[in-house]
Amino acid sequence: MPTASMDASPGTFMRTLDPLCIAEIEECDFSRLADKPRILTIERQRSFDGSLSELSIPLSPRHSSRNAEHYRIVDHLENIFSPGRRSNVSTPISQHCFEPHPMVAEAWEAIRHSLVYFRGQPVGTIAALDHSEEALNYNQVFVRDFVPSALAFLMNGEPEIVKNFLLKTLRLQSGEKKIDRFKLGEGVMPASFKVFHDPIRNYETLIADFGETAIGRVAPVDSGFWWIILLRAYTKSTGDSSLAEMPECQKGMRLILALCLSEGFDTFPTLLCADGCSMIDRRMGVYGYPIEIQALFFMALRCALLLLKQDDEGKEFVERITKRLHALSYHMRNYFWLDFQQLNDIYRYKTEEYSHTAVNKFNVIPDSLPYWVFDFMPTRGGYFIGNVSPARMDVRWFCLGNCIAILSSMATPEQSAAIMDLIEARWQELVGEMPLKVCYPAIEGHEWQIETGCDPKNTRWSYHNGGSWPVLLWLLTAACIKTGRPQIARRAIELAETRLLKDSWPEYYDGKLGRFVGKQARKFQTWSIAGYLVAKMMLEDPSHLGMISLEEDKQMKPLMKRSASWTC
Ligand code: GLC
Image (cartoon, rainbow, N blue to C red; front, side, top):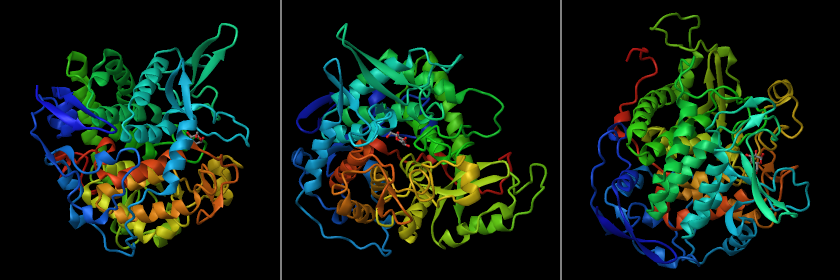
């Protein structure tokens, strides 16, 4: 077993790389993972040679020792930061600053206030610390909300809280989950949990919500995926593979995977979902095969491949995952992808085609495409649309799904570049005055009535319906770094810095340009704060990206053409 010393903040520690850990770091082709992972040479090199000149490298107050050099896998960052991918379109390069922004210290203070303790140990962060509004369930630790907090702690060299969180949620997974008289699948991870203090026994317990108290009573499909993704981020960042190797963690992963790999009536490799089962947790017409879930599913499958032990049970899962990934990437890259050419093809589609030779496989009626998409689509650029199912293409833009598609390499490098082109070309619409639109455009009028069920919180350009969510900044920044365009992230961060702190870290902003603090937005929303911190830390030290990004699997090439028949 090779040993490598890793630079970790704030101190330095030694780590031993065992085969699981090496496979995890290597991010090799997942189709080859059924074999034993190859041993890698690790050498010391500058963490960020490619586009270093574009990045400001201010010294972080907490971990300035990190910035100079890092141990890294030799061939890892070369691809990510290929200078050829950088854009020269309309995004001004801002002044490099070498002083940490004053907001950073404020943000850390706010994050620390949001810590939730269980029997003396920090186990997560509260969703929002806003005393001016009714708490509802914002006083709980949400799994998805904790992810940016966790990344901030990992980047700051504080992995303990992340480990505690992963273990505690794992315990919650193993409890019985019932909604009315119906028992949920074993693998379901909670949407959120809270600490209950029994004053009589002076005893604390954790109470989880699997959807049984949430508005709409929908179980979170994304929680399990985020849990696996976070476990891999923890392993990657600390080099400690012992947590992932624990039998409990292996079992937890398998339970999550069993839920989404089970065979049924599906003809698509995508995952069928109810509305409101992810970040957009209210009815918003995202039922079916929402891009957010498909991208997270893809990423979680790839992370699981890196973390699963290859014992008898693990091997079986590895095979199933590998097959599913092949089918899923084919499906997503071909049928969810929309660019100018594709739009033009669909516009001219014939309908009622039968048999394997059909070009319009899902019988999409061209007239069902909304007018706005023809103006919105730039000549250069493209994106994964919101949803594809029989005769239904939801062509709305969803930020989270597209960023995760880039980070997980579900998108090809060309598609990733095209998504960034689109963000630049449609900056006003997708970023406006406050990053970033959760989806675009808003639905209104009759469509709003039908799709949202007349939801007064999701009125046009508010909340989930075209609202702007600062938390998405970290995802944009990660995608920007991966595609070699940090200047886009810097521009977005600068926008956020003009208001976020002054407005007390709102949950979301309203309006076409995101100019107004959201109507019912909570203040001191933890993931708005953590999202900002993670974005800053990643720009400062782009090697952090490795925690949350996976390189392209070479086996996925070449991109097959949409018109190819089912048999290829
Ligand atoms: C809102 C968001 C959801 C988030 C929760 C807690 O319901 O839609 O994604 O997890 O608030 O912040």
